[in-house]
Length: 287
Image (tube, rainbow, N blue to C red; front, top):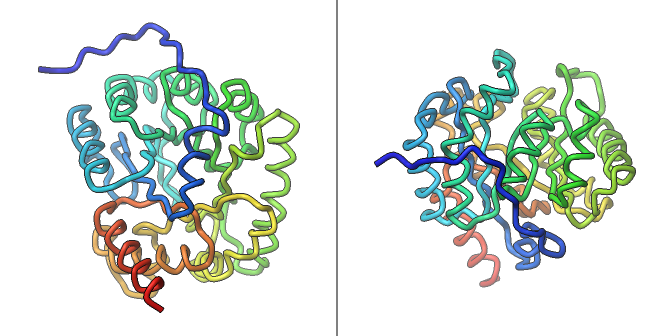
């Protein structure tokens, strides 16, 4: 039987001190953010979970496989171009039959959106995190919405296009500084902020690799770092492969990212990532 969804405004629970994300981060272990794309055109799994029941079923699988956070998006923000802009009403229509059931699974839910109105709508229904692929710098209302709802935010670095001639580490550092200034002026609590260097977004393959290799360059901000290397094209540049054939490269990138200081990895393949992190942790303990 299809799940009925009320379209009335539902009051979100009062935010807990520091937020659900801060509580998870306090466990001092790498967290796994599972990806749920309710889209027809995502670069890796576009269309597989556009049907609401397929999306909810996949979310349940991600939870069963050990995800700590679920990241739900209904507009592709694919890093290589070709994504089609989605009207506000359509983005919400894709989310409406899915988001309540995903939130009911009990994990912190991140809404991956470019639109402050969609972020506000999702937060009012119980989402805890906004994943902003433009790091609060695309729409001036995004920071205000996050602050007013007491939400957490993933600030991701992005560029309109890659420039192989720039110092990508300096570029990302300056971007983060600007975003953090925006967050502070809006009143977003610092303990609710995560930084993401944006693997694949506005970067050459070499620059994406450099961001993972030199992740410690951003430890000075004193904030948790997230790396989303899952199935990204830089893996293809090293070993030619389609997105669904990049599990090995994704695991390698995320294990090294954790070694270099990542607190969260954003992945499509939760079970293999959870297993790889557990084995790596056991080997480190046995040294």
